[in-house]
Amino acid sequence: MSDLRVRFAPSPTGYLHVGGARTALFNWLLARKLGGTFILRIEDTDVERSTQASIDAILQAMEWLGLNWDEGPFYQTENFDLYRGYVQKLLEGGKAYKCYCTAEELEAKREQAMKEGRKPKYDGTCRERDEQPADRPFVVRFRAPQAGEVAFDDLIKGRIAFPAEELDDLIIQRSDGTPTYNFCVVIDDAIMKITTVIRGDDHVNNTPRQIQLYEALGFPVPRFAHVPMILGDDKARLSKRHGATSVMAYRDMGFLPEALLNYLVRLGWSHGDDEIFSREEMIQKFDINNIGRSASVFNTDKLLWLNAHYIKNGDPLRLAGLLAPHLAKRGIDPQGGPEMAAVVKTLQERAQTLEEMADRAVFFFKAPDSYDEAALAKFDKEHLRAVFDAVADKLATAGVATAAEIDALFKEICADKGWKMGQVGQPVRIALSGGTQAPGIGEIVVTLGIDETVRRIARARGSVAA
RNA sequence: GUCCCCUUCGUCUAGCCCGGCCCAGGACACCGCCCUUUCACGGCGGCGACACCGGUUCAAAUCCGGUAGGGGACGCCA
Image (cartoon, rainbow, N blue to C red):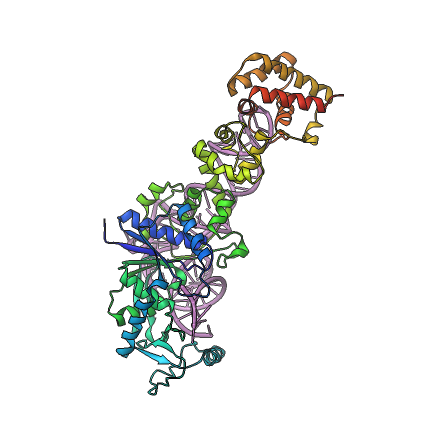
């Protein structure tokens, strides 16, 4: 057990987004790799926007991905008294002050500054204010040191420095008395003894302000690692507009958690030319130094490829369990049909997602109620009837049991009748599945069972009866 | 606008710190061929990038400077 302590701190204002999941993953990996502690903290200081539904959704997504945490979940709303105490401490030490400017005034000043090409920074109106009107609402601002520069060595991006005069007096307590984000993170990270803060790139600008806060409060400053953003195809920050961004949406689309994890870890991180990483390999090979400095574009094709890989190599029994809800969605009750695992085996090399697998699996549980007419039309009816008769007859009497034996049986029929494999296989495939895109004949027959196979062939035979 | 960050095939990336092994390697996608009773899997091959301009050097994707482009932040959101 090392003394490394990291945390993932989502705000519960929505579902867990893939970008957040990747940040969580990197935190988790570092903790697991080094034997540190991974903490989950819910940043719910924005009481307006935080919801219990979001909290549940985030927790559920973390669990689905298997990103287990060692401590927490902690909630910032439970620490309000603590934050208030520190605000008081800064106020007493002259490191913070009350500001009576109204939101409207500030907004106007901000616009004005932008228009004049200046950085919209708080102008310090209340910084040196003496009188403290008891009857007016106020916020508490941190008195940010204005001299020198604030720099830190980012574990991913290297040294980043900001001139102190760029940093303004940020609000640490709202007029309703609640503390703000930048203040809470600092207190929490300090109290929880976080040693390494791994978070999204969009926080680099907050970092120097937070460092000033750590210093003002007398807390040790942690190490920082800012992971680059995930972009959409148009290189703009990934959003719903680009497609699904919710982790759980990927589950619903039939992705496996290990595929999403593998995809996410390779997005911005690499280990030589390796592409496939099991959970254990990720932990073993993870190194924060190999996280890239630039943003990366989310590419669904590659995710699909990985998902196909994990489906292809997954345990049929486990996949069967994961497939069940997708079948249910299609009104299929696998009870009484072929073994789910057997069905999965025939489809593992043919499906990129569980959704696709479910689509392709339907016919195993429900005989086709129509046939692909165009495909059937390639054969004349007489030939069709002859094929169905020959196959049904042979199957019913041959006593074959394996896919290989069944395939051999078909070859036999072809030899006997002088047919080509395509002339026999295709009609039978249509009779059994309704279409032409299906597993090998032997596999289908063995999975469906001889009885059901013969029944379906008879039905197809009936539909082409003269 | 101001500040911060980023820039290798369409995409994810290796290489960059410690210049030569790189007329740049792998993967996804795409194209072609092979395998094949369908659909897939698989195998083989192809296409395809060091943003640009200068400098340093015998030698630069790798070092230095500038330019351009992209992203992020600038909130009593997190």
